[in-house]
Length: 356
Ligand SMILES: [Zn+2]
Ligand SMILES: [Zn+2]
Image (cartoon, rainbow, N blue to C red):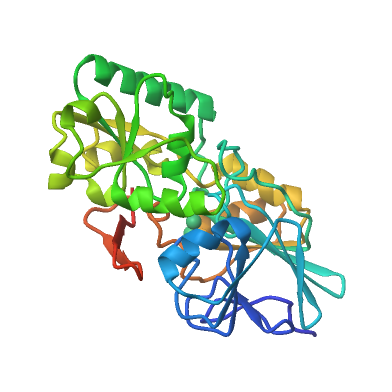
């Protein structure tokens, strides 16, 4: 029997025919990257291929890499294998990777979200025979509300804080959630301030041509009474730090899919928990997998065991595979004290907590 077009190795997802890897976690010659999050875009590869909108963030995070970028729908051929990218709806620039050789089509989802967040190019199902999918929130308890409802809650909370003279701090991961929050705030309430880690990512995206709402970076000169009338977008690593405390009294809201579980807000010591995720919920996962029309589906990270069992029960040919994905903020259930450090070549410390 011929080898499958894509296989799972200890370096990442490998295409022997095309001699490239997808989201490898160990150094390789040719890496195709689904998106710029740290658990998918590692440092140390010779050549990178990614979506055009991941360009500046990858250069900011990974330094002077040899990076080629393409648009959604554009095709690159390596040793006869056609590679193309389709929107994954996860964060700006996130792509599903479609790989085709002699009529056989595989799609690697990377991380994805089926709801339109108003800033990432919306998810597009891609027909294939073999689909490699994440399942971060592959449990029926995870069911997201429409985005408009979530942001009505966020904006009402902000408005009330301004009326009460309390500062508003909203916490989300620096690539993805921060921009989603920024684009959906009601700017008639006040100004948007950002933590440096978030503003650096915003600047990278703006260099890439992404139009974001206006923001002001918090500096030592920022006037507390002015900041209090606005909203501060901050990364998970800033929670409880002196940086955050200097805006007190403040109300702090946490945005994460994990907020759907009882106790998650309390463990984060948040005043408000907003159930907001960059990943598909249960229904999103099942409908996305169904829409591919695939013969077989491979689950890379999340609730892989129970989700695989469920898919097999309803008639899919599903199996679990081992990968190192799932290191970013949203991908592990809530446990305390876990964090990882990430240092950019520019010397900034991008410290994001694994969980939220
Ligand atoms: Zn991701
Ligand atoms: Zn991930």
